Figure 1 (cartoon, rainbow, N blue to C red):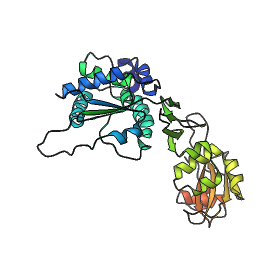
Figure 2: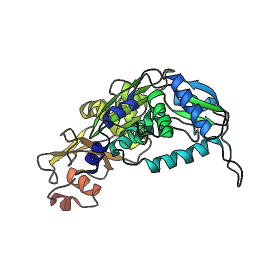
Figure 3: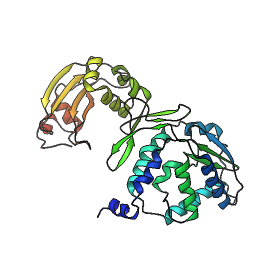
Figure 4: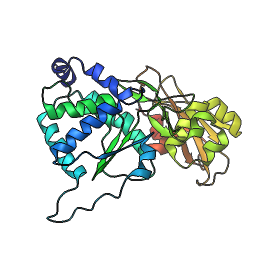
Amino acid sequence: MSASRRANRRFPDFSEWLKHAFRTDPADRAAAEDAITRLYALLGEPPPEFVWVPSPNAAVSYLPPQQALSTGGPLPPEARLANRAAALRERRRGLPSELRQTAKESVAGLIKAAIPHPFGLHWYGQQDVYWVVPDTGDPEAELWATLVRSCGWWWPRDGVCVVSERPLALRTEPDGDGRRLHCATGPAVVYPDGWAVHVWHGTRVPSWVIEDPTADRINREFNVEVRRCAVEHLGWSAYIDQGGLELLDRAPDPGNPGCELQLYTLPPQKWHAPSRLLLAVNGSVERDGTRRRYGLRVPAEFDHPLDAAGWSYGLSGAQYAGLLRRT
């Protein structure tokens, strides 16, 4: 029996628990403040002042400077809380790995990456479903479970706790056994203050990739993943037409039977040496059963697609032509 199935037997309602990670209704402020106050009490601290913000990005402006850790000195509340949370995790292992992949890596991780400023120790509230176990009978664990059910991200500090509202919209798509952020028509995540995160099939991208992709913007983009997403959204045919690319040559792909390699010219681009575009079909099948077309920049010296494809594998064109199958 797989590990995920064994986990499912121990936690039959984990799919219902995961739904909290995607909630977009207003926070239950009273419940969140009560749970946080009780966590402060476990540290021997008085109730903090609560500052509610409309998004994690807005929290940066309200956070007091994080206390430096001094040798032999008392730890600040957030550090002591982190120690208690770590101990709690050790006692409560066994949640399905899909929870971490979805809630922490595919959702919270992308939101965090979109915030340009560091903000120290924090917790994800609703997206802490990946490690908080509900309904255990442990009073301390139940406080964390209450926070999963009641609010967005939060930052405990000495005498003050900054807490974020949940997003207004959080758009996803299936991804194996879990879900990942994606929206082809607008931001995948929107908070009450308008702060938003754009995501294309699990990859965070600038807003133009979703809202106005053009060949010119794609050609000026330095990040290869952003370019890939923008081309996928625009479509290869539109990109080739808009960019004025000319087909130099085409050939059957010997490493991918039934598919074709196409070699195109590329206009001069600011961030790159003279190059050409090799358009190929991925040898691996995607989760939806399709095979993704992808473009690879190759040196401008290549005039034949087999030579360009071989170069990408460190082979000559003749060696690549002898491949039985590539991935």
